[in-house]
Image (cartoon, rainbow, N blue to C red; front, side, top):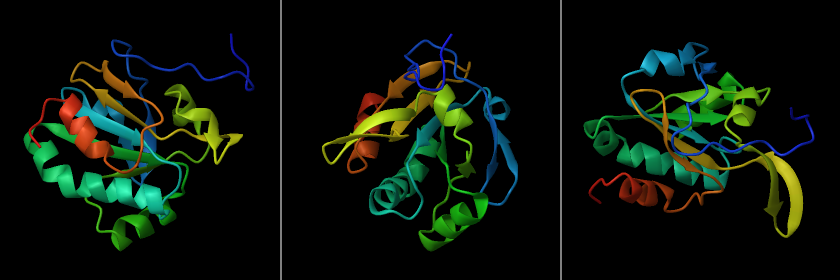
Length: 163
């Protein structure tokens, strides 16, 4: 049994993806189980409308059509409230659901919250992470501490999708 101060456990390929229901940018509930039978890319980012998170989200936006044609859905998750996510989505013309996890419960289920190094200091916060969930609900890829820049290209390569 772990307590709140212990490091979150990390998911690995072959694990069952933890199910969740979160509100999207419009306040509508989105559940992972509703996407059963589909490939889903779930990515966690620290904060809407910050430079790195904007770069990453826009990269997913710009690649969404090719990801969808390869039968992948994209869900972005942050600790931001739905209103902030709606502003982010509108400001940057994002074309996929942004989900709100204000209590970080889903972040913790996925091991996407914990200690990290930030400018040489150890801090506790959101770990930029991406998970590919297969149609049967299993984790196909679990990527932790990814870089915002170039992440989608790297992910596409790992998924065997053409550049």
